[in-house]
Image (tube, rainbow, N blue to C red):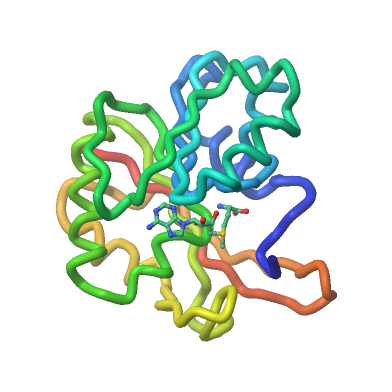
Length: 184
Ligand SMILES: C[S@@+](CC[C@H](N)C(=O)[O-])C[C@H]1O[C@@H](n2cnc3c(N)ncnc32)[C@H](O)[C@@H]1O
């Protein structure tokens, strides 16, 4: 749980750059993160969380209490998922970097292309080049903004990128690359 953050400030800041609070948001691999609750607190009406772990989703939903019903919860593997609708904002913190196999990244990007409309936003936060080589004991790919841009290929323009030093619950630092793209 080194990636855990009690207050998802960087995600909220990135999402606020995308436009008004009426925009729909999907948090890919949101798991037990507190982001969905923070978005509901902002009175956002259209919030979805997708995660491969039903257990993590249940934890997040129960923690929200009655507000849990205001969020749509999808238990799916992002590399196998076929989106049934589109969202204005695609947010992924520390999920894409787990996809070390090219075919998994291709499947992820296929879902992303189908779920994000023209003018929609994509927020990707992965470990930076100088970040850890593993996450939860699993190997990860580390990215500079150019690397994430290359993964998305054509059709997405980089609007903002920045680096974040995340302090883990154990007090270590993890370097993240954050990118905000817009589909053109
Ligand atoms: C490092 S955690 C990050 C959680 C959250 N995004 C955050 O920033 O706190 C990675 C999350 O991605 C989920 N995950 C891993 N592989 C996935 C996949 N193939 N499809 C969907 N979710 C996945 C895990 O269950 C976990 O909740």
